[in-house]
Structure formats: structure tokens, C-alpha cells
Length: 570
Length: 44
Image (tube, rainbow over all chains, first blue to last red; front, top):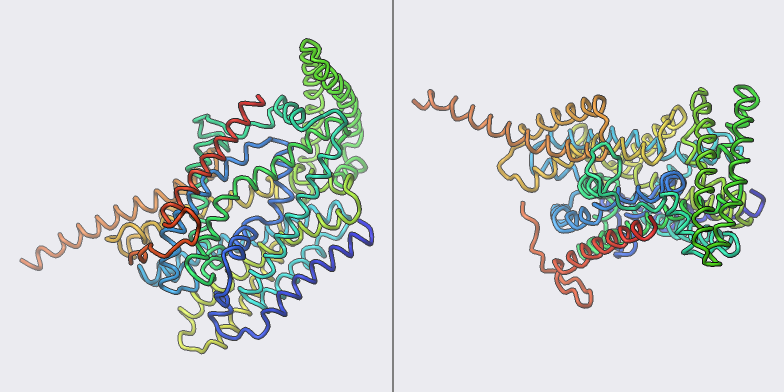
């Protein structure tokens, strides 16, 4: 990064944050601070919902997923539009009619105080842990490739978001997200255009797709019924729908975004905007990764994308073995590249036989390349370093090496914008839930608005510091975006179960659903540590267990009540 | 606690009720999945 890139980064980030604080200065009432001023239109709501979900991890890590595994991850989002329809039709009208500040307040209206606390508690635990990851994830990748201090990156980005979220509340979050998502889209589009322009001469876009298909990178829909496969059409539709229903319908970081619209219509249209554009957006980001894979068939990629970690190991650890693997990788890549150029020539000439032979030879060379990379990854994984999955470094490595200055600054700004936008929504939600569902509900019930606004600011700042602290001591092993989804899937199913019972099973009371939720959460923990199924299924299992156990407990309590009542009556 | 009546106008051309909006969004989702399945088959 040069001075121009740093200027783009610093001016854009500080500019958006300052604008958000200036526009929302002087908000004193609790409703304005937690729900917003009620002026937001559908586009602002839609972009805010999108920006909350699409964190820096989405933009850093998803292209890496596309590079390594192709388009299959898009299936994770197949259930999201259906979930958003249910949220818009059922959840949203109730939240707005009851004028709740948090989703868990609704549980208090429907059941009782302890069930409300349980819902809020599960959210705080899950989101509090996730908040650390959303700061840590981009920081580890960006600090490694930029040579910045990891701790300084975590603290600076964390404090910036804490300052404007505390100062401006919900409106500042919505307002800044609108501009942040604009920066993100501009950056991703610029990267896509540069990538297309840098594909080798003679390789058309359909050629690039055909080449990617030959490496099994375009398998977007998997009809397999196996529960062990992480992403299939069925796990995406069913598990993905439960995950999205829980996330969009019951996670306060999302609920807070859409209940603040000027009307029910604006909230609904904002959700429908996401329902329509969620799948194509994820597809586009994954396709970017697939095209980077195609690009690197003609340009030598590093054998290990986290080059700082590789250089460190090469110097201090298994240096000889790493360098030998690097040489094997480069030789295999040169052969693959030659064969692919021959493949393009044969394709132009319409020589089917030569086309097939070149493709086969390229594939064999690629297998040797993959073996060398896997050997390197195994050595690196054995090293005891604080690092993320290597695929998380694919996109940023491409950006730094092949994008012009100015655009590098724009893309790095986009990553920070994404980090801050989702982080701000999380902190806002954590602060609101702690204030409304814990502090106002248990500690102090009768204070004025100014007191609760001050308390909310304090809790938001405290959660910000907790997230920064967690990020400073975090150690991650999985691909970052998967780590966030896995964590969510462990808790979301049960929380969704609580809400589904509340909405649809009118006869079930607070005591039955409370104990059923605790038992269902324990079951999910046990299954997670003992089964090897796709994490998306835990959303279904947790939800189904909570609903079924609630019904059973209610029936048992009713039976006990009746049998206990008989002798007395007699 | 039933949701309020769903009769507020959508303000969208050709989709006067919310049920119609939801059907259109669901059909769009099916179309996206269909296109992705086609892509999978077109470049095996």
C-alpha cells in the first residue's frame, strides 16, 4: 500500500464515521437511540440488513472458498429468501405492533420473564463470542499481509466502531452502513473488472467458465442426500432456512435494523430486497474466487498464500521441505500453464482430440500442484502459530499484487467498512439487549429515558471492549466464515424454537418452553461434540427438539395438574 | 397475539397484495436455484 491507498482508507473510514456521528448528534430519547428516528426507507433498511450480515469475513473469506472449493457454498443461502418471507409475514408485524425494543421483549409478553431472560442470554453468549470473531477475522488477515501489528489493527478498528456506535446509536449504524455497503460494492466490482481484464488473451469468459468447470469449481447445486456433506441443496434449503429464520427473525442485531423503519411496508420491502439479492450476491463473491482460480492457472500463485507465515516457517522450521515443495509446485504449475495454453489454441482451431489431450495433461499437472500445496498446508498447520485458514489470504494476496494503487486502498477500505458495519450492528444489539432485557427488566425498572440511554451507551462500550479483548486472545483454525456460521448454528436452532412456539403453539406456557429450550440446547452441545454431520443441521435439530420437548412437557404438566387436581376435587 | 391484518398496500406495480409479493420473491428464488443448477450441468 502506498500513500494514495492509505489516504483512501483513512479519509473514507473517518469520513463515514464522522458523518454518522454528526447526523445523529443529540439523540436523547430511548426510542430514538435504540430503534432509530423511524424515518428510514426500504432501501436504507435493506442495505442495513445486508451490511449487518455481510461482514468483512464475507468479502475476505468467501472468494477464498470459491478458489478452493468452487461455488458449492452458495447453497448455504438457498433457504434465506424463504426465511425472510416468513419473517416479513409473521415476525415483523408482531414486533412492530408491540413496539418492542428487542426481540426477546416479545418472549416476555408471550411467556414470562425467565423465558425472556433465557432468549436474551443465549443471544448475548452467542453474539458476544461472535463479536470477537468479526473484529479478529479481518484483522489477522489484513495485519499479516500488510505487515501491521495484529493487536494495533484489532484495537484501532474496534475503538473506531465503538466510538460512533456509542455516540449515535441505531440511526448512526443504519446511516453509516448505507455508505459502507456502497464502498464495499464499488470495491468488489472494481476487483471483478480488473480480474476479467487480466485473464490471458484469447481466453473468453465462456472459456474461463469451461476451464473452471473442468476443475469442478462450478458445482453450485449438489443433489446428494448424504448428511455428511457440508453443503447440499437439501441442507441449504432446510438447514439454511432454519439458520436464516433464526438469524433474521430472532437475532437482535438484525431485528434492530428492520424494526426502525418508517412503516411496516418499508421494513417488509427492505427484507424482500435481501430475499431477492442474497443468493446472487453470494454467487458473485464466490464466482470472483473461481475466476481468481482460473487467473492463477496462468500466473504462478504462491504455494501458500499466507506468505509471511510461510517465510517464517521456511526460516525457522521445516525450511528444506517447504522449499522443495515450492519447487515441485512451480514446476507442476509451469507444465499446467503450457498445457492450458495449448488447450486454448486447440479450442480455437476446433481440434477436439488435441483439446482433450491438453486438458488431461493439464489436469495431471494440477494434481501434482495440489499435492505440493497440501503438503505445504500440512506442514504449516503443524506449526503452532496464531493464523487463519490459508484460503482466507487468497483474495487479499490477489488484490495487493495485481490491482493498481488507489484501488488497493479502495478494497482494503471495503474490508474495513464491512468489518465496521457488521460490528456496529452487533454492538448496538448487545448494548440494547443488555439494557432492555437485563438492566431495565431486573436491575432498575423505573428510571427515565436519559438514564437508560446513558446505560445503553455504557453497555455498548463495555461489549465493544469485551469483543476487542476476545479478539486479542482469539485462536482460529477453521475458515473464518464457517467458524461464525458454526457458532451461530449451535445456538440459533433453540432460540428459533422459542420463537416458533411463541408464534404458533398458543397452548404452551413459559415453564414448559423454558425447560425444553435448556434441554434442547444441552442436546445440541452433546450432538455437536459426538456427531460429524453438517453444522447446518443443528439449526433444524435444536429448533425441532425445543418445539417437540415444549409440547411434551406442556402435555405432561397438564396431565400432572389434572391428576393432582382430582383427589382434591373429590 | 395474532399478526395484524395484512391489508396495507404494497405500493408495487402489479403486486397489490403482500401474498403476491411473497409469491414473486419465492419464484425468483426458485429461478436463481434453477439457473445455478443449469450452470452446474452446463460446465461439468
